[in-house]
Length: 149
Image (spheres, helix red, strand yellow):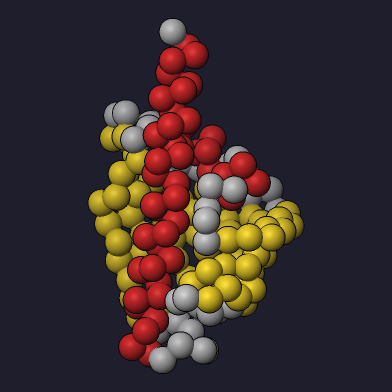
């Protein structure tokens, strides 16, 4: 297992808007270029199982995650199947006026990757998630501001 800490990223929208985006379900999911064929299954009011094919480490492979959302504070994820199965991590959201800070902390592991590649795979995953979400959140927030005027 490798502990990964990724602190200080920011979305260009206030926290209430970021949470509306997160709860967008398939709309939110469609912004991610590294997933396809998503399937959502409600486990409880705050938890879903999310299955898809994910592009990670240069290839597509099936994966499944359990995701628990506790707005406006955190999203906790447990990777159930796939390249990073057994990994557990939490996204922590903090309001900063018109921006939202996002910090991620987790223990990442893999049954299929050599130990030396686990941290690189975890960071690749986190970077791709942020890279896809950040511009979409900014665009949608800017549109919402212009329609309120």
